[in-house]
Structure formats: C-alpha cells, structure tokens
Length: 192
Image (cartoon, rainbow, N blue to C red):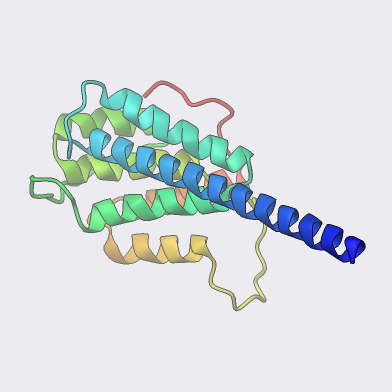
C-alpha cells in the first residue's frame, strides 16, 4: 500500500511537471508569435513605428533563432502570419499591388520597398527578406522525390505561385531554394 501510494505520487508529480513544462512552452510561443505579428505590422506600416528597420531585424532574428533551436512551429507561424498579412491586411489602409523588384540581397529590396510606402509593397519586401534569410523548416537539404507528403514548404511555394501580385514571383522561389540548398541561413542578420 505504501509502495502503491509512493508510485502514484511519483506519477502524479511527473505528469504535473510535463503539463507545467508544456504550459510554459505554449506561453513562450504565444508571446513570440505576438511579437512577430507586431513586427510585421510595424514594418508594413499597418501600425505606427518609429523604426521599421528594427522591427524587420527583430523578426528576422527571431526566425534565425527559431531555426537554430529547431523550432519548426514558430517558423511556420511566422510565415503563416506573413501570408495572412499579404492576404488580409489588418490595418486601415487599402493594400495595392505595386510591381516590386526582388534582388539577390534583401537589403536592396528593403530600401526600394520603403520608398513605395504601401503596406502591400512593404509586406512583399518583408516576405522577400524572410525567404532570403529563414528556411521554411529546420530540415535543410532534404528532398524525397518519391514522397506523396505535402510539406509546409510545398504549401508556401504553391501559395506564392497562386497569390502574390508581383512580376517577381520566381525570385521568391529562387530565394527559398537558395536558403534551403545553397548553404542555409545567414549566421548574422545584416542591418536592413
């Protein structure tokens, strides 16, 4: 009886610890997701921000950190928030569809987009920065041509192909490919 009670108490403590750890992870995830979305809104101009460069850099750094920590969930959430912003803007302004030239480095894209002063153009530029910096998942260089599984990367690529209002769609896809197969992520986030 004493042994049974001891085992029950040990199991209950173990389960409580697992639940507490899971709750803490969810709390951290929600805080990071909220910070990411705030940075997206700041950079796109949907909410006022004194330093949009800093907002973009913070978002990209969190993405790189998530990649380095193997956090596919946060990376996926980050991209889904960006897609949502491109699809359904939250702010007061009407998004228009400027033609945006995506260059090899996101710094050039960043500078050209800020002069457009449209939330859609800024969102395109931020997406360009993301796909040029943050892989769509933590498993680089893996491709199984025989797999029927649709990956998150596949879904993002198809979304880009079907939804971006820009003549530069192929450059987004090239950036995704280069980050995945061409050496991975940048070790440091350059200043935009």
